[in-house]
Image (cartoon, rainbow, N blue to C red):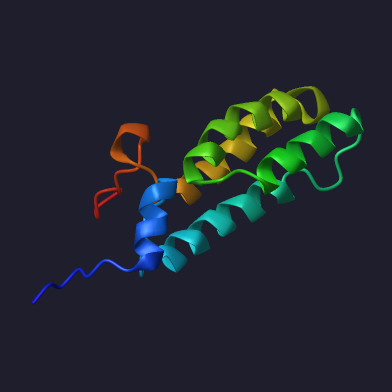
Length: 117
């Protein structure tokens, strides 16, 4: 008896280079969307170069995964510095960074904090 019987869907996914949908994908998407929402909220009410704010908003909305959002943090900071000042930009990133905890690979700092800290 084969446990992993191929079917037409898995064959097509294999040909297209896509992984089969994971049963826990919705859990990861919840974390992704929470981080995305928090980052987009940082843009609310910003005045200045509205085209840059709109571009960042679109980049955040269409980021494909949590790693893309992680790398967009520095671009968000660069956008916030001239509009809100360096201190507030750094404070904003300090609030966003813990949201990534547990969602990133270890190489990007995704290891969870020890229980005593």
